[in-house]
Image 1: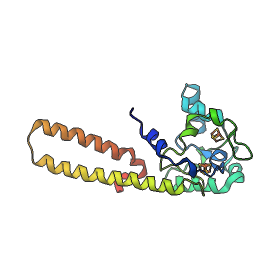
Image 2: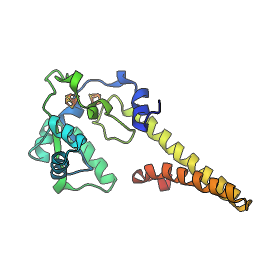
Image 3: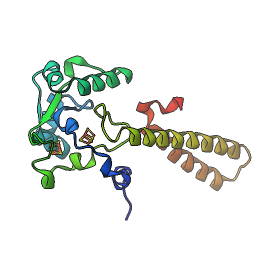
Length: 195
Ligand code: SF4
Ligand code: SF4
């Protein structure tokens, strides 16, 4: 069976690192889509948006979320600013309807895939003190190393290209180069061009 990048990620994630503090369920955000966009996506049948809005309800304001967990709110805002994608007007924080006072999930067995997958990459923003922090740092380092290797391979291919006129080999080089460029592109939003 071929696993996707995310599924492979989940398979290797050491679950015991979760401290069950419940912070990621109490204050969360979605910086890819605004609340309005999520509502539209859900109405149009997007499963991810439907699942998200089924469990999460928006805080009335950033301040309201800050009253629950200022550390997590500030951590997220700081990260968005660092990535140059902080848009205060359209930023919504959410709280899950199903988190219990003892930090357990009241729908654990039926929780949606987005909860099962979280954290789904080394690049997600976690609340300060999250048990996955150090492990996610290592995963980011691995991603960066992968991109550096890919760039070295591109250079090798460039040299190889200068040494052949074989059409078949040149086609193969094109194909491998495209695959490598796609690997680098996956991390372009994270700054892979500078790694
Ligand atoms: S913030 Fe981290 S440690 Fe806390 S519940 Fe979420 S994943 Fe677990
Ligand atoms: S459904 Fe459960 S795991 Fe998912 S955010 Fe809510 S409390 Fe957390």
